[in-house]
Amino acid sequence: MRDTKRFITCAAWSFIGFAGLAACTINVNDGNANQTLNRNVNTANVFTPAAATTPAQQQRARWTVAVCSSRSSEVTLQAGPNETDSRTFATWRASGGERIYELPARLQNLSEIHFRAIGAEANPVELCVLYDGRPKKRVAFDEGSENHTVAAGDGDDDDCRCTQ
Image 1 (cartoon, rainbow, N blue to C red):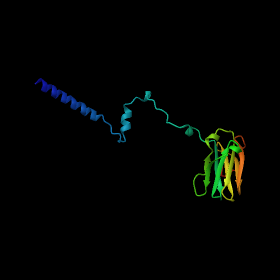
Image 2: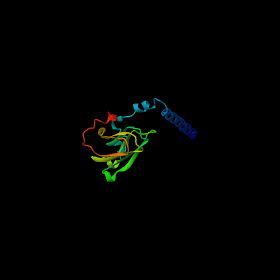
Image 3: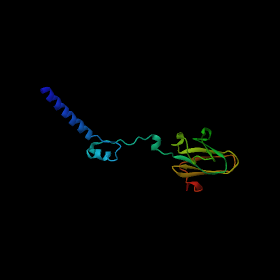
Image 4: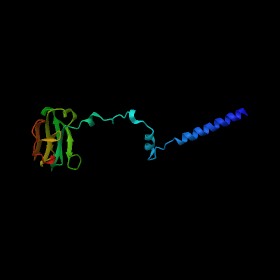
Protein backbone atom coordinates (compact mmCIF):
# COMPACT_ATOMS: atom_id res chain seq x y z
CA MET A 1 0.00 0.00 0.00
CA ARG A 2 2.79 2.35 0.89
CA ASP A 3 4.48 1.79 -2.51
CA THR A 4 1.22 2.43 -4.31
CA LYS A 5 0.71 5.68 -2.39
CA ARG A 6 4.29 6.75 -3.22
CA PHE A 7 3.73 5.90 -6.91
CA ILE A 8 0.52 7.93 -7.04
CA THR A 9 2.17 10.88 -5.27
CA CYS A 10 5.16 10.77 -7.69
CA ALA A 11 2.88 10.46 -10.69
CA ALA A 12 0.75 13.38 -9.49
CA TRP A 13 3.81 15.62 -8.97
CA SER A 14 5.23 14.55 -12.32
CA PHE A 15 1.96 15.40 -14.01
CA ILE A 16 1.78 18.77 -12.24
CA GLY A 17 5.44 19.48 -13.13
CA PHE A 18 4.90 18.53 -16.76
CA ALA A 19 1.73 20.62 -16.97
CA GLY A 20 3.56 23.54 -15.37
CA LEU A 21 6.44 23.18 -17.82
CA ALA A 22 4.07 23.03 -20.76
CA ALA A 23 2.31 26.16 -19.52
CA CYS A 24 5.63 28.06 -19.47
CA THR A 25 6.60 27.13 -23.01
CA ILE A 26 6.62 30.04 -25.46
CA ASN A 27 6.09 29.64 -29.17
CA VAL A 28 8.80 31.70 -30.86
CA ASN A 29 6.63 32.01 -33.96
CA ASP A 30 4.02 33.86 -31.93
CA GLY A 31 4.12 37.60 -32.53
CA ASN A 32 3.73 38.26 -28.79
CA ALA A 33 6.58 35.95 -27.72
CA ASN A 34 9.10 38.76 -27.26
CA GLN A 35 6.60 40.84 -25.30
CA THR A 36 5.94 37.87 -23.00
CA LEU A 37 9.65 37.28 -22.49
CA ASN A 38 10.50 40.94 -21.96
CA ARG A 39 7.99 41.35 -19.13
CA ASN A 40 10.02 39.01 -16.93
CA VAL A 41 13.53 40.15 -17.85
CA ASN A 42 15.51 42.71 -15.90
CA THR A 43 17.28 44.60 -18.68
CA ALA A 44 19.43 46.73 -16.38
CA ASN A 45 22.33 44.26 -16.45
CA VAL A 46 21.91 42.88 -19.96
CA PHE A 47 24.92 43.41 -22.26
CA THR A 48 24.15 43.80 -25.96
CA PRO A 49 27.26 43.77 -28.17
CA ALA A 50 27.50 46.21 -31.08
CA ALA A 51 26.82 44.78 -34.52
CA ALA A 52 29.93 43.24 -36.03
CA THR A 53 31.46 45.41 -38.73
CA THR A 54 34.53 44.94 -40.83
CA PRO A 55 37.17 47.67 -41.14
CA ALA A 56 36.06 48.23 -44.75
CA GLN A 57 32.52 48.99 -43.56
CA GLN A 58 33.75 51.39 -40.87
CA GLN A 59 35.60 53.57 -43.37
CA ARG A 60 34.14 54.62 -46.66
CA ALA A 61 36.41 55.17 -49.63
CA ARG A 62 38.12 58.55 -49.68
CA TRP A 63 39.21 58.44 -53.35
CA THR A 64 36.56 57.65 -55.98
CA VAL A 65 36.01 58.25 -59.68
CA ALA A 66 32.64 59.04 -61.25
CA VAL A 67 32.05 58.34 -64.93
CA CYS A 68 29.97 61.34 -66.00
CA SER A 69 29.47 60.50 -69.68
CA SER A 70 31.10 58.59 -72.46
CA ARG A 71 30.42 57.69 -76.06
CA SER A 72 33.22 55.15 -75.85
CA SER A 73 32.13 51.54 -75.34
CA GLU A 74 34.71 51.07 -72.58
CA VAL A 75 36.90 53.24 -70.39
CA THR A 76 39.81 51.67 -68.50
CA LEU A 77 40.56 53.30 -65.15
CA GLN A 78 44.08 53.24 -63.68
CA ALA A 79 45.50 54.77 -60.51
CA GLY A 80 48.57 54.64 -58.35
CA PRO A 81 50.78 56.64 -56.03
CA ASN A 82 52.70 57.89 -59.09
CA GLU A 83 52.72 57.49 -62.87
CA THR A 84 55.13 54.54 -62.91
CA ASP A 85 53.17 52.58 -60.27
CA SER A 86 49.66 52.97 -61.67
CA ARG A 87 47.53 49.86 -62.18
CA THR A 88 44.18 49.14 -63.78
CA PHE A 89 41.50 48.91 -61.08
CA ALA A 90 38.27 49.00 -63.13
CA THR A 91 36.80 49.07 -66.61
CA TRP A 92 33.60 51.04 -67.18
CA ARG A 93 31.34 49.63 -69.91
CA ALA A 94 28.56 51.44 -71.73
CA SER A 95 26.51 48.24 -71.60
CA GLY A 96 25.79 48.84 -67.92
CA GLY A 97 27.28 48.47 -64.51
CA GLU A 98 28.79 50.92 -62.08
CA ARG A 99 29.06 54.65 -62.49
CA ILE A 100 31.18 55.36 -59.39
CA TYR A 101 34.34 53.38 -58.66
CA GLU A 102 36.47 53.27 -55.52
CA LEU A 103 40.21 53.51 -56.06
CA PRO A 104 42.21 50.56 -54.67
CA ALA A 105 42.65 50.28 -50.90
CA ARG A 106 46.39 50.87 -51.16
CA LEU A 107 45.65 54.43 -52.36
CA GLN A 108 42.87 55.41 -49.96
CA ASN A 109 45.14 56.94 -47.29
CA LEU A 110 47.36 58.86 -49.72
CA SER A 111 47.07 62.62 -49.99
CA GLU A 112 48.04 62.54 -53.69
CA ILE A 113 47.32 60.01 -56.45
CA HIS A 114 48.04 59.61 -60.13
CA PHE A 115 44.95 58.84 -62.27
CA ARG A 116 44.70 57.74 -65.89
CA ALA A 117 41.63 57.02 -68.05
CA ILE A 118 41.90 55.21 -71.39
CA GLY A 119 39.04 55.24 -73.91
CA ALA A 120 38.49 52.17 -76.10
CA GLU A 121 37.91 54.30 -79.19
CA ALA A 122 38.15 57.95 -80.22
CA ASN A 123 34.97 59.21 -78.57
CA PRO A 124 34.33 61.82 -75.85
CA VAL A 125 34.80 60.71 -72.23
CA GLU A 126 34.14 62.77 -69.09
CA LEU A 127 35.04 61.67 -65.57
CA CYS A 128 35.53 63.26 -62.19
CA VAL A 129 38.08 62.30 -59.51
CA LEU A 130 36.69 62.84 -56.01
CA TYR A 131 38.25 62.95 -52.56
CA ASP A 132 35.86 62.53 -49.60
CA GLY A 133 33.00 63.13 -52.02
CA ARG A 134 34.40 66.48 -53.16
CA PRO A 135 35.24 66.95 -56.87
CA LYS A 136 38.99 67.46 -57.22
CA LYS A 137 39.63 67.00 -60.94
CA ARG A 138 37.50 66.89 -64.08
CA VAL A 139 39.02 64.58 -66.67
CA ALA A 140 37.70 65.00 -70.22
CA PHE A 141 39.14 63.86 -73.53
CA ASP A 142 38.06 62.90 -77.04
CA GLU A 143 40.58 60.24 -77.99
CA GLY A 144 43.28 58.09 -76.47
CA SER A 145 43.84 58.73 -72.79
CA GLU A 146 44.27 61.40 -70.17
CA ASN A 147 46.31 61.33 -66.96
CA HIS A 148 46.65 63.65 -64.00
CA THR A 149 48.18 63.87 -60.57
CA VAL A 150 45.47 64.87 -58.11
CA ALA A 151 45.96 66.01 -54.51
CA ALA A 152 43.44 65.86 -51.69
CA GLY A 153 44.26 69.49 -50.90
CA ASP A 154 43.44 70.71 -54.40
CA GLY A 155 40.55 73.15 -54.60
CA ASP A 156 37.19 71.77 -55.66
CA ASP A 157 36.78 71.56 -59.43
CA ASP A 158 33.48 73.24 -60.24
CA ASP A 159 33.63 71.87 -63.79
CA CYS A 160 32.72 68.36 -62.52
CA ARG A 161 29.10 68.47 -63.66
CA CYS A 162 28.06 64.95 -62.71
CA THR A 163 28.85 65.36 -59.01
CA GLN A 164 26.67 68.40 -58.37
